[in-house]
Image (cartoon, rainbow, N blue to C red):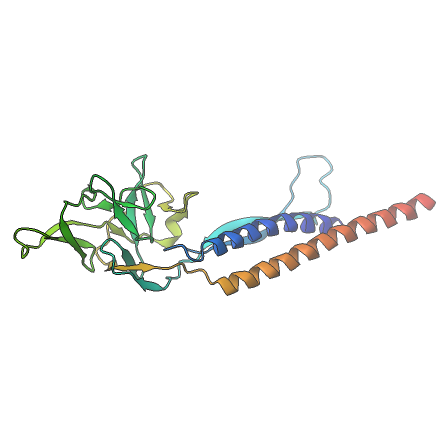
Length: 250
């Protein structure tokens, strides 16, 4: 009974956390460049410094780690000049307000009033020497290596000039940590070096890698797990009451 209470109680709590993660994945099933999140549980023995240590059967089911599914999502052709999709492994670097770098697969960019390439939420995109600035009245094209070329829309329209190049990185997946804002960063907080092997596709976006059908099945499975764990708690309480009655009549 002792094992039953601890395992069921903590298991029910962590199952609710996993349900929240599944709900978050479903909410981002159509978010560009989103990576599905998974929670992994493990048993943790309860340790005590008291004189009476209690039974060694006491254990909690705890959230051991948050795993990210880095499987690529589907490519969607948009024909927008500032849409960018990473082909294969790799990330696009962003300059955060505190000066640090963050990384994303969401290549849906736009220009602000100053001609700076930024995300839809206003975060500048990193180039070779900092944020990328686009001159006015040009037609843009993005090469497979992230190079941004511009063709003037007036005057000499046969002169193509290279403006900048997106900073593309490919750090080890184990070193990446998802932040509360949804962007990834290196675990040590340092900027990742540019990787010339990362390839991109201009005029396209990468969709979310969330499988809605699979996530719905997980949600149903977790709901049944929670129900089973609550039944175990009720059974433990009923056993305790029955044991108390037996002891009281003696």
